[in-house]
Length: 143
Ligand code: HEC
Image 1: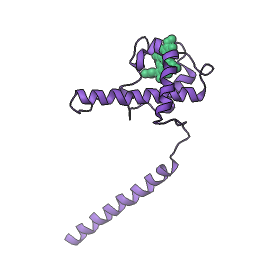
Image 2 (image 1 turned 90 degrees about the vertical axis):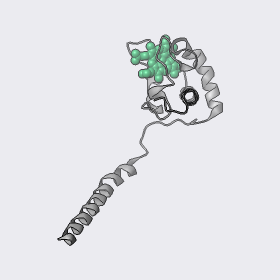
Image 3 (image 1 turned 30 degrees about the vertical axis):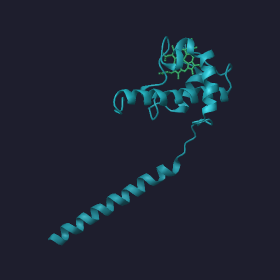
Image 4 (image 1 turned 180 degrees about the vertical axis):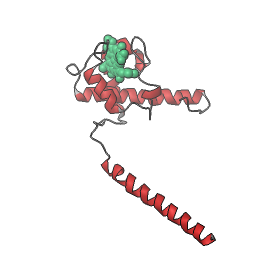
C-alpha cells in the first residue's frame, strides 16, 4: 500500500519533469527573436548623442529628459528598466509615429542609428530616475 503510494508519487514527479522538458525546451530554443535590438545597449557615448538629439527633436513635447509634458513621459513605469515596453516597441513607435496624434514619424528625419541613440539615452535616463526613486523610498521598488 505505502509502496504503491510512493510509486505513484514518483511516477507523478517523473511525468511533471518530462512534460516540463517536452513543452519548454523548444520555446527556449526559438529565442532570440527577430525583433530589432539596440546596437548601442548601455553605451554611454551613444546616450550622450541621443540626449542632444532628444533635445532637438522630442523635448518640445516630451519635456526635458523625457519626463512628460504635452506628450507622455518616457522614463518611468512601463518604460523603466525591465518595464513592459521593449526597445523594439520604442523603435517602432519613433519610426512610424502614432497616426492621428501629434506624435509624428521620424523615419525620414532621423537615421536608424540616431533613433537607437535616442532610445539609449531614454533607457539610461530611466535607470537614473529609478535609482533616484529607490533612494528616496529607502530602496523600495517604486513600481
Ligand atoms: C509634436 C509633439 C511630439 C514630438 C516632437 C515627439 N512626440 Fe512622441 N509623442 C507625442 C504624443 C502626443 C504622444 C502620445 C501619442 C498617443 O496618444 O498615443 C507621443 C508618444 C510617444 C511614444 C509612445 C509613448 C507611450 O506611452 O505610448 C514614444 C516612445 C515617443 N512618443 C517617443 C518620441 C521620441 C523619441 C521623439 C523624438 C525623436 C518624439 N516622441 C517626438 C508627441 C510628440
